[in-house]
Image: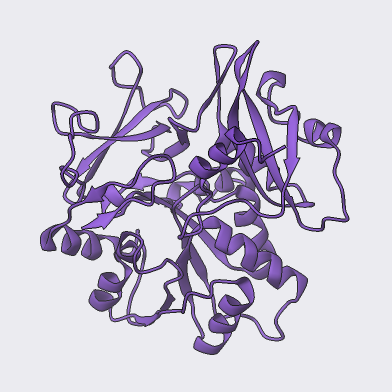
Length: 361
């Protein structure tokens, strides 16, 4: 049993079986998925208590990969030291970990090229700017995946197909930033508010539902009716789209979506855009109450250099290139660090609590 990290609600106990763990591991290591073999040395940045480290210990055993287990010190310099000394060529981790590593390498490039070929990311969306920057500057590929504690945890992974080889770099980046295609043994669907199935057009949004060989069938000592459909699909709570090629893209968590003046605003999209700004280290967006619009977005910003200030007008102008006026936050709070969970994900539940107590002004 493994408990969810509780970023949007209270932690829940998820039950696994030997069979589901074996099926997950043997599928995820395959060439079009994780692509692991006995040639690889893999750094498990994800802690062991988090979804059994994404199944990596089992995958490494089945594939014959070397496995590097760091201590609890997950600061960028410590990770870079391990990458060098152990000649790690593949790794995992949440986006905030790799954002810190990228900024540290950018600031102080290593004397010799790292052996790292690619890093696999889940837990939250991998910003397109980070995918592009890592590959352009250091030749290191970011691979976006998606999953939950309830899916053991991986359900999708995004790699390009042969049909994409003729696309431009920008078009390829758009696909790689999606959460990807469901693995064999996993089924995905998008359900609209009216209960009907959404078309696979890459545009129509709805709740992502999943079922499969390693997807949860119940929570430990809990009423499960709200989390599962009558026909056995698990309701993920993620608002998503699926395109004609089967690539799924997370738009937001249902609890993190911002409804302003009757229109939905994606906090994920705003965060990704803000973190592409050259002066911003981290950014997160939450909904706050508003008398006129019911809710409006509030952006919390961590600067790369506190002396290098940004104005609200600069950020509004920066975001206006990609967002409609009603979607853009009018309020920006500058903080030293975004509150995170024990596994490095932005803890929006805690951030909302701090705002409610007047500690974010």
